[in-house]
Every structure is written in structure tokens, then in C-alpha cells.
Length: 477
View (tube, rainbow, N blue to C red):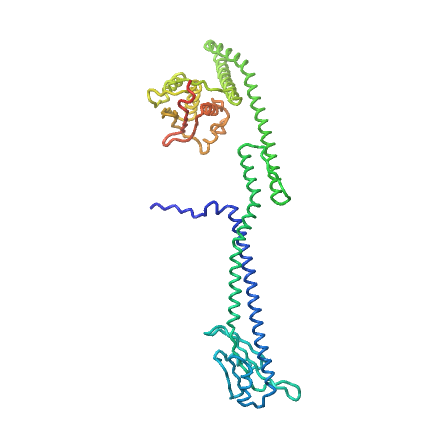
């Protein structure tokens, strides 16, 4: 059963960027701060309003009871209790032992309040929620002063019920104001966050643009540090790093140029004596049959090494021409199968290589460089792979395709990426080989000179596979 790949549930890139996160953080902090301040102010104002209202109600009740108390007779009767009741506005209950007078709706008075007054509290307050809204309950015992100046409970208890509806409405109004204040802080926070993000991210955008210029090869690209903050320090550090990088690259380029010039000079200087040595070797080769066997082996080795050195010098001079930009393709109309057959025939490879191509395939290419490309690829396949080697040609309207496939062990893992490097050898333990180590590099240079591409890999069921694509009709002469 095939398992469905998990869906990518990440947020869009714009929402995961530094700008979005910075704005979100600023807005969250600003809104949280505004909401906290508003709610704290509203809560403090509400508590102050409730406390002041409770204190005002309690002081008014105590003052009126105090004003009435001197006119009472102790022990009091019902008329005395009515005097207290009448002195107080609103719902009230006045009790003395079994006597009780009241006015208004007093059902909200709780047993907890009565217990507190019985327990000796001189002023008991309690807020309760009732069906008609929040109520303030006040319990006050009436005190009498003895001859000794001490105050003691007279047994008269007064309970009042006061409506806190107006206070609750004021508290609700404060709460709504806090909510509106928090809501109004949101657009202001967004605006401030946008301004802050613009100021903070501008140096970051400049840093990104300058880094891209450096990556594109503009080594003179630099930032302009401004201010004395961390971003200015970052810009200064970036400029120092870029300057160091530019210096290192310039030094490497100079060393590489010197190295290439040295190789070209050495190859050029070796060419003349090698020509002489080659002529001598050819003369000696003609007389090999008349030489003693021990001398013949030495002469054959000298001839082989001379030819190998000549090939290496020729490859070095070819590479030097590419490096100097002196190599130019000489385009002409060629028949691709004919060029490949001639390449194989001239090198006696026709028995080891099978050509798979149409009878005719015309293209405009450099005949000599095409021969070098085919010879290097086929020679490499015969040297490092196993026969049969297949050369396959095909084409479309724009390109010609050349493939060379062998039946050897194939390319080692990771070897294809370095195969076209100069002096690259897949087997590092192989110190010397018939090739100079420049064949694949010269092949790639010839392909690129035509504006084509070359790839290396392993073929399914076979060995190494090299695929070349060349423009078919470009710059026809």
C-alpha cells in the first residue's frame, strides 16, 4: 500500500519572514501592555468607587443612628425601634431581642451578617447579588455609654439594605472603556510596528543586497555603516569580511594566473626539444630489429616515454590556449556519423566500438574538436571500462546528442562531479597511466567552446555513460 506523503502545513514564506515576526511581536507587546494598563486602571477605579460608596453609606447610617440614640429609652419598646427605622431611608430592619420593626424589602439580609453583628463587630458590611442586582448589606449594633465611660451593646441591632445598581453601572462603564482603549491601541500598535520594522529591516535588506552582489562576483560591493548600534557593528564586520575575501580571491587569482602562465611557458619551451627527441626516437624505432634484445627494450621504453611526454605537452598547450581565450571553433558543415567513423578507423577502434546512428546526420561544428571529443570519450571508455563500447548519435532540430557507453564497472560514487577537473584520477592509488589526466578536461572545454553541455554518470545495466549535447546549427558558415 502506497503511503500518502505528509502535507506541508508550514505558513507561507511571507508570514515566516523576519518582518512578519517583528510586526507580530511589536503588536502583541503593545496590545498586551495597553490591555493590562487599561484593565488595571479599570479594576483600581472600580474598587475605589465601591469602597467610597460603602464608606459613605456606612457613615450616613452610623451618623443617623447616633443622632437618634439619645432619644431612646432603655430597654426600648417598639416605638423606640420605629424612631431608628424612620431616621434611616430605604429598606431597614431594627431588632431588640424579640421586638422587630422593618421597612422595605429586607429579604437579602444574610445570617452571616447577623452572626457578625452578634459577634461584636461595630460595623459589618457584605455585598450580595440578588435577583434585582447587587446589594450592600450593613449591620450596626447600637451602643450605649455607661457611667464608667465604656461603650457596650444595647441589644438594638440595625440592618440596612442598599442598592448598588448605580455603582455597578459605573463599574461596567469603566470596563467598557478599558475594552475600547485596548481595541484602539491595536491600529496604533500596528502603525508603530510597521515604522519600527522599516527602520530595523532596512539595514538587513541592504546587507542582503550587498551579499547577493558579492555572490554574483562584485567583490567591490560594501555597506555604508551608520550610527553606533549593533547593526552598524554588523555592517562594519561584513565589510571587513568582504575585504578579506576580496584580498584572498585576488591572491588566489594571481597565483592561478602565474601557475597557468608557468605551465604554458614550460610546455612551449619543451616543445622544441621534444620535437628533436621524437625525430630521434622515430629513427631509432626503424632500427629496432637490428639492435640487441637488451638494448631494444631500453630503446622501446625511451620511445614510449617520449611519446607520452609529447602527448602531455600537447595537452598542456591545448589547456593553455583555452585559459588564454585563444581557442576558437572553426565551424563547418560536417556529417556526424562520418566524423565518428573516421575517428574510430584512424585509431583502429572499429572492432571494439559499435556505432549506433542514422546514416546521415548533418551539423555545423568544428571537425577537429569534434574528433577530439569522440576520441577522448571512446579512449577513456576503452581504457577504464570494458568493451563493447557503444557510441550513439541522435539529433533534433536544435541539438545533436552524442553518447558513449561502456560495459565496465562504472564511475565510483561521487566521481562524476570531479571527472572533468584537470589531472583528476578516479583511482588515487594509480600513480601513472597512459593518459595525461587532462583528456576529460580538454573534452569538456571543447564542448563548452561550442556552447554545449556534457554529463557523466552510470547507464542502467551497463558501465559509465557520457552524454554530450551540442548546438546543431549555431553560427553556420
